Length: 50
Image 1 (cartoon, rainbow, N blue to C red):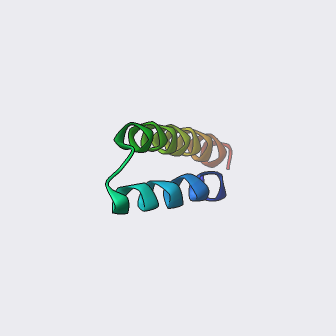
Image 2 (cartoon, rainbow, N blue to C red):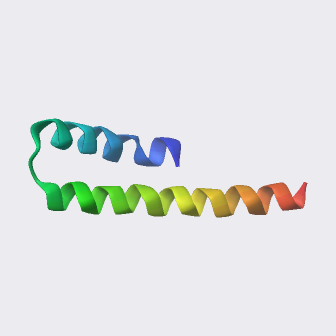
């Protein structure tokens, strides 16, 4: 997730500080959460193999 979402997180931070484009903030937040959940699933899969 880390590098995959860093640009999205920076954009969320910028938009939040300006208090604008709430719809875009929500979409980016959902994308970041989805990527995080996918990473957790992948890490669990890797750990289960070890």
